[in-house]
Structure formats: structure tokens, C-alpha cells
Image (cartoon, rainbow, N blue to C red):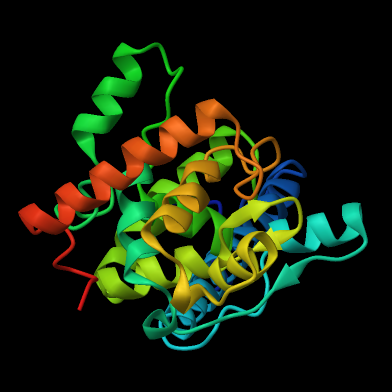
Amino acid sequence: MTRKPQSDNSAGAPVTLRRKRKSGSDRPRSRLQRGAARLRRWVMRAMVFGLTLLMGWIIAYGFVAVPTTAHMIGEDRRLGSVRYTWVDMSEISVHLQRAAVAAEDANFCLHWGFDMAAIRDAIAAGATRGGSTISQQTVKNAFLWHGRSWPRKAMEAAITPVVELIWSKRRILEVYLNIAEFGPGIFGAEAAARHHFGVSAADLTARQAALLAAVLPNPRDRNASAPTDQLRARAGAIADGAATIAADGRDSCFAN
């Protein structure tokens, strides 16, 4: 009688399946992956939170008076005090409105935040002249800090179109004229008018407005109430420019 060969497992014996153990290096890798995913989630949440705060800040400044700026705080620490009084656009002489636009951004009513022609001219001049619009300067003064750095310029470039989208041109100019520096520790049209000429911003003459606008590029070294011959000449050119934009309608987005 032929005997059948026996199999390795006897009939009915349970079969044990062995799982491959994870190597010790897999566990640290999993922990690192979970940590990286957690970090990404926190970074995304922080970015969303920061963008939400920024949008709320921009929207708020579209309606309320700007209480202070980073530059004002810095100058207050440096000088011991600053002069700043917010006034509505209706309380700022139209002469100063036109003079500031003529001096800093003649095409203010025509662009969407960036004057590409002015930027090309600035590049052609070897960056010896500025190409920033009033919109960009308003963003810098209201939300950022002074100084030349790529991070600030990048943030300025990102925020400017948002401000242009949410605010009116008249509001942009109103904020600009209220927080621009017109002398060491002198911020805004009202403080500047009273400090330099002893009048309110509403009562500025065309000549006084042109002198104030003439100091805007370098308010620490220029004095509107004690102008040099060079500053008087610049103010005269600004007054002519203000008359030109009034005549050709380039003040239509802000002047009543």
C-alpha cells in the first residue's frame, strides 16, 4: 500500500500569517511627515488670518480717519512729539489737492495705481528719480514703513491694486494729504498749513499750496515757510502744473 507524502501543515492546523515589521527608520519618517503637514496647516491658517486682518484694515481706512502711522510713531520717538490733525477732504483747499497731484503724480486720475510711463522714465533715468504714484505712497505711509527694501516694495505692489479697487480716488488723495510729512514732525495738510502759514488747510492760497507740495519729496531738508530760490522755482512749476490739470480735466476724480 502506497503511503501519501505528508504536507508541511497537518490537516486542520492553523496557518499563521506573519506581517512584515516596519523598519525603525519608517517611524521617524512618519513623524516627520505628520509634523511637516501640521506646520503647513499652521502656515496656511496664519496666512489666511493675516490676509483677513489686512483686508479689514484696508476696508476700515476707507471710511475712518487714520489714527497714526508707523512713520509718525518713529518720528514721535525720534523728535519727542509730532503735529497731526485729521481733516476731511472738504476742509483741504482744492489748490493743495491739485498742487500735490501736479507735483507727485500728474496722471493720478488716469492710472490704476501704477503709472507705467513714469516707471519707465525712472528706469531710463537710472532710478535717480522716483516713479511711485500717490496711490503707492499712500499705501506705504498708511500700512507699511519707510526705507528702501524689496520686501516693502513687494508688499506695496501687492496692496496698491487692492486699495485702488476698494477706495475711491478722492479717498486715496484725502488719506495721502492727511498723513504725508510736510516737515520734521509735521504730518498732514492741516498741521502743515498752520505751522508754515498760520492758516487752516481750507484757506491755503494757490502759492502756499504750491510751496507745501514742493517740499513733499524731501520734507526734512525743505521748508515751505522759508523757501530757497530753488524751492520757489519748483513751487512756480507746480502751480503751473496745477493750473494745467485743472484745465485739461485731470483733476476730475477728486476736485468738486
